Length: 264
Image 1 (cartoon, rainbow, N blue to C red):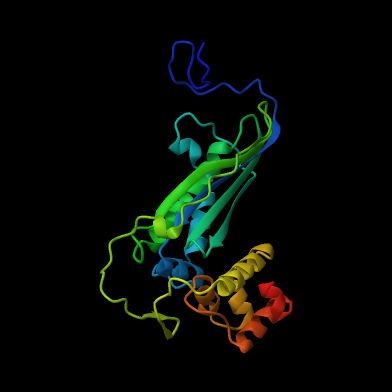
Image 2 (cartoon, rainbow, N blue to C red):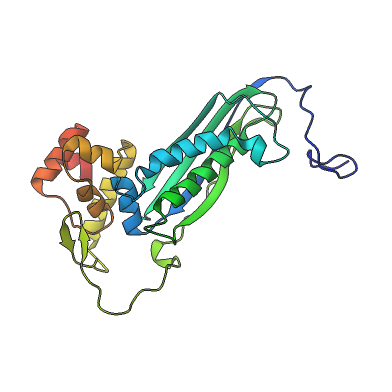
């Protein structure tokens, strides 16, 4: 007898008979990460991508994909999906967007493939929406994070290996000539220096941690504060050294904190 449930005693593939299994609440969470160029990352977060709202399109595509799994993967069972949701976690330091898909149902088999498919198609849609800006974007680390319910019980993925630094990733060759200033949100920013000092980087890391702890999205937070989202993205990506007092106060007011709280 094969140890693989999708193979019968003769080794032939078949759909597993789950009719004798009890109905139970089941949930699965999967992730996928898309690594972008700085320009593409800013376009996604600022809503200026050529095709429109990248994250909205990726979210709808992922949800639709979760409901289409039996049509895509031959031996999967048709399931009544009770929940399908995608969340996006931007990582400005890596110019990356992490997609987290959650799928739930009450049934006789799990929804791991539905969650994995939702995350995968969400990532593919994100790529399609931004490929005009960055064809070298990379989709990586598609995996199951957790599942619950069923005979096998709960599962939680081991911690992932730390991602390689952005500087170590293969990117298209660029000219070795003198770097030219690049336009950013109506201003001209000089090329990023190799080192901006430990104090400046510590301040930037504190600001990132503040945003993560309060689940603040750059575009939405900037809109609420009445400032260009490029102010936040420029600081997060190292294109600017900080904010003017006026911008800092507006951001703090929108987040309902003191200015110093954003950097401590």
